[in-house]
Length: 237
Image (cartoon, rainbow, N blue to C red; front, side, top):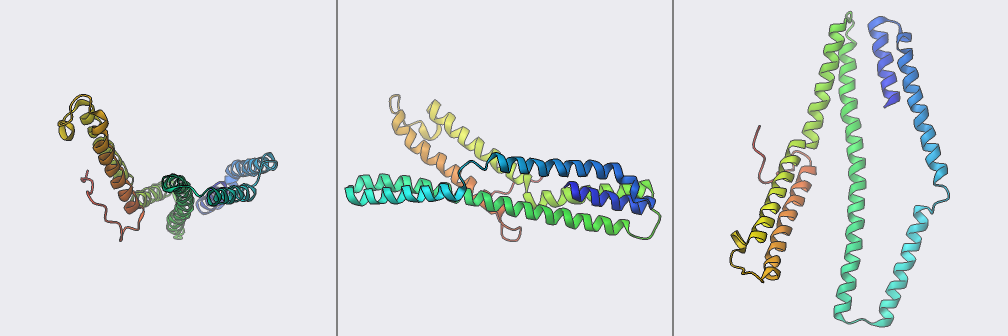
């Protein structure tokens, strides 16, 4: 970002005044930020060189899992024990899938952000390079147009309003279930005092249904606009 700011600032200074040297203080600031970032990366690298690497940790984990599997075969556990072991293995697999999903989502969002900002910057620079004399008003107008374009693109891609609406809707639904089971009303009015354990079974089931619905909506919002059709669209403001 420092390098991009320096290039754009120098270009604007050159086009508006014909003297790129007017942006030298800004270039120095951007260069200082870039240098500090590089020094921070070098410091993090040397600070963590004595820590075990990811490959070593993964090898140790694979060795431990292999030892566990051999122990399972040797002990020949019964069906109940195998189910419990499978539950633990599934938990590990779920964590791995979620970690990989977050990693690829961050990469995708970073590249998409670069594409959106780059497209808006290209349009802005093309608008400035018209051969006409640039004034403060025209540069200000172009900068405002650039900011509005970036904001509109980010709003359309990340769907912040839809995400906020669905999260609040799920929170309200789970809160309603929690109040109902605590007060013994609604779906839980048939349970008498002393039957809290029996009431918790449908409460857990309904709570998981709301959470699964929220996860499904989240996945649909992460899809491209031409494929995502989340149910229960939020009302227009």
